[in-house]
Amino acid sequence: MRLTQDDRGLRFVIRDFSDSHVTVNDQVLRQTFLLTPESLDAAVSVADLDALSEQGESLLLRDDPEVIIIGTGSRTRMGPPALSAALMRRGVGIEYMDTSAALRTYTVLASELRRVSLLVLF
Image (cartoon, rainbow, N blue to C red; front, side):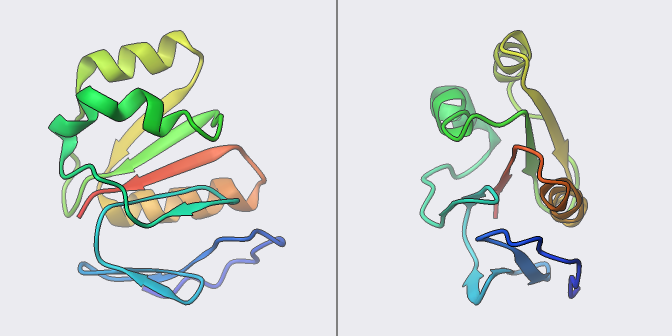
């Protein structure tokens, strides 16, 4: 699916995606990545949701987001409850979605200049 929403001057913008890749700016990503409107970490070493229980909080909070969206593949899966609880105690929202919904939601929030982070698991 191709996204054409105004990028509002953001440094990193999702341009298109399919089941096997996401294009951020001109970079085609086929592995887990973390994206904010100001940064892209294309080499995140999180293989699945279970791995988030170990390093998730430090990884997801490094750009001081107000909301975190996690794309979990072709269907929505929930992450570690302890991670969600820890983030909520800090006042940070977290949502787990299928990846296509996560990408669309991230694009809308980023275009509204919200402090949002997106973790996509492949």
